[in-house]
Image (cartoon, rainbow, N blue to C red; front, side, top):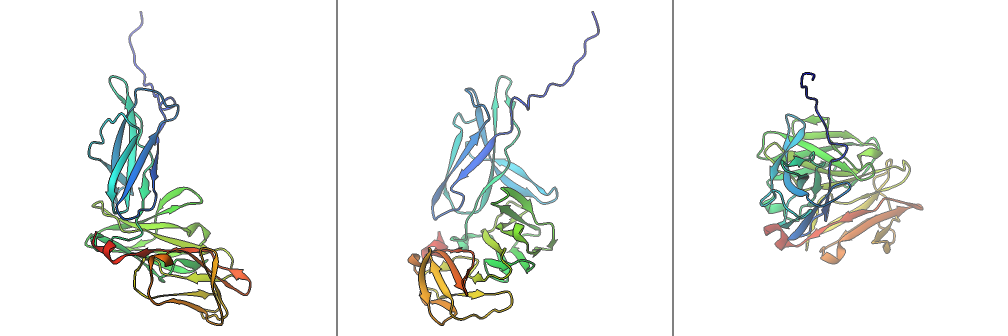
Length: 293
């Protein structure tokens, strides 16, 4: 009989990392958010654990805080009621006795466009203040709030990829735009606070126009102006403007003015100049009462 020895056995091939999904991805006032944790080759006996992601700026990663009643649930879904802020979530699964735990899922985020401005402890400003930009534009994203450290995070829909801004100067992320910078952006503090999120779109047609529209939601009753711009010419005339693909203005003016915004003005806008169309961007409208939720 030989001497006894031991060797490690890894079961990651049989117990893969779970996949977390969140619905909806963008919040509306008082929304409930549903988290779903999916394990490959699902079977009976799994318990599920639910966490909030908290930015760890020193490690360029996140730590995880267990959500209330989020330990060892039998259901593979978890509902968060009355979500108001941008936030990140993680899940993992376990089974057996003693219990084996999978790795944590990749974080997934639910975003608020800023309907709840008065309760946000942090904010993100974009300069120049517009959703659409040309390639090679210099764009600054600045985090503001009573926290000493920040990072800007983004999610690229095309690449399905989360990443962190690598060109931070203090609380400002500086971007020299390319097509890959079309993404959702938000700020994270080291104490777990998040700003509202913004969409940024980078124009991939160097000769085409961009729509100049506000980054953040517009309050009901306020006035707003949308315009169309070329890289070489900022003021245009004879511009066509569309709301949800319906032509709403076609005259010599180069600007679409809405004197008192209402909820019916919310939606996708785009402009057309000399036969070329801009990308479309969503303009969000918030009620005055939304600021006090």
